[in-house]
Image (cartoon, rainbow, N blue to C red; front, side):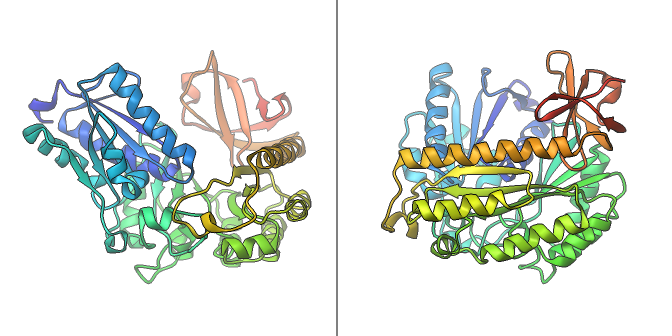
Length: 434
């Protein structure tokens, strides 16, 4: 710990995905190791860091709103904006009054050094880069939650989906090798975490830059002592191979929990999106999972309102999803991203129609999610309880991501306990008493 920073405070605000969350946590650890005190974003701090997302226009807007909020509460603070939006729109962000540092994909992990530089010169720092020049993989994992950690295993994407800015914000697909990634998992285990969520931009593409494979990685992670559970975050259906599903079905540690992006149930729309599969491939993946793991949780990403999505094509999506044995829908409204091919496509869908279609799919999701809970009644499941005390209650999750509520007890934190699920406290949570 460096004495010169003992009285300094830093606050982080993370927008977007769990990958951003893992990176913010890793960057924050350098600050605390140097002597900074990490405080909540709403509190008074010397340095405020906003780690940005740019998947939607709303994400960009949230960044700008956050800057204004900081300047209002502490006009003398140093504001640093990093991440995806910073990579794509560095000059635009630097022009926002109050912003002192803007760092894109290549420089965000050097934030502490840039803050030291800023303190000496009091000059603004703006760094984005030619995204094709980004080849380094910066490892990261989250800390703070006493139960689980998000481990970044991959970054970047080589898929040219016509609606997406992520390849321009994060660069080409890359990863550390298996040995280094397993060592990160071991480091997490030493800190007492029981569960790891594997995260990245396109995690099924793991190994592209090291000549390895995602299957080889999870086989090695399965042997890490101290980690009791692994969850696989979003994985493309065409990369979710039979061998991966079969391995998960036999593993004690890899959980029956899948998050698979569909985006549309219309093959015509999938083609316009330049997705690398047809809906038949997606349906086959669901059937394979359920054949081996009947009680598996399956979450599905779907976009409504993509250009060219007529009423007929939306009905294709609805009927397709209604017929799938899935547990939950993550519904996203299409957002025009400047510079993407979809931004120039004809047959735009009105915002009112997008809202109506979103509501329809949310209702379908609610129905499927509730059915998933009802089907799980009167089963014994192993629950990992979390540390948060919410009005005298605490919550945990089963292997297949069922939420469980019980009266708060410190003795239950980070414990794996087998319970019988007999009573629903509401439509999406079981209630148990000890």
